[in-house]
Length: 101
Image (tube, rainbow, N blue to C red; front, side, top):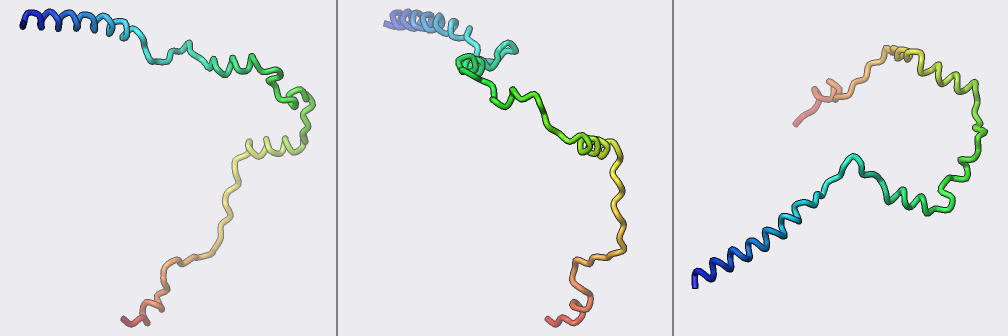
């Protein structure tokens, strides 16, 4: 009886090992060659995928304003103005000396 059990265990393990070897050949990873194929296929099926405003080649802009913005980024920022103002955040000394418990 034990010999039959041993043969059954060996036979069943060999059958399962054959299935596992095929399963291990499938990888669940991404490669550098993989891309966004779903989005590409969706765009292929779209009748007009572009925004209608993309045909406008006349881009309006103010040249003087653009030059001013470029000059603002080229020049170093001006230093912050100095003030002679003192700000006290804590309680005043008079309030702590007159306080009675």
